[in-house]
Length: 128
Image 1 (tube, one colour):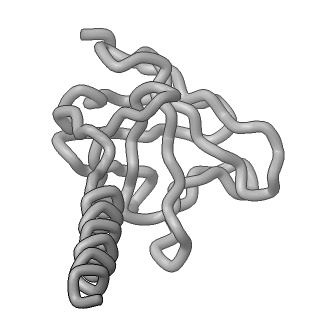
Image 2 (spheres, rainbow, N blue to C red):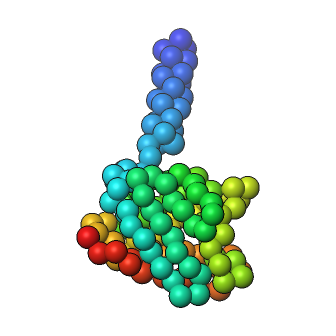
């Protein structure tokens, strides 16, 4: 009876440890500088990424560059989207991934529209 109890406790602890490992594992990070550049969309303006800081208009927010099964993306600390044909940074909303077209030397970044319209592609203006 005591052996069965210890086996049950060990099994529960093993499951808890596995969940902690799964939940604490982040997506692999890429250098923040890998997305550096100035990106432009004729409707919405300029988006600048420089060393972990994303600038849109007069606002700035920090970001990281990560990669998942869909490819590389920028994950800002706030929601960066298009609203009323302009770039908007909303610190009170949950951030979304800004998809890069490729990991190395991206030529564009995809920004979602807040009104569920199609996303906007911001093309890189300065080529490395």
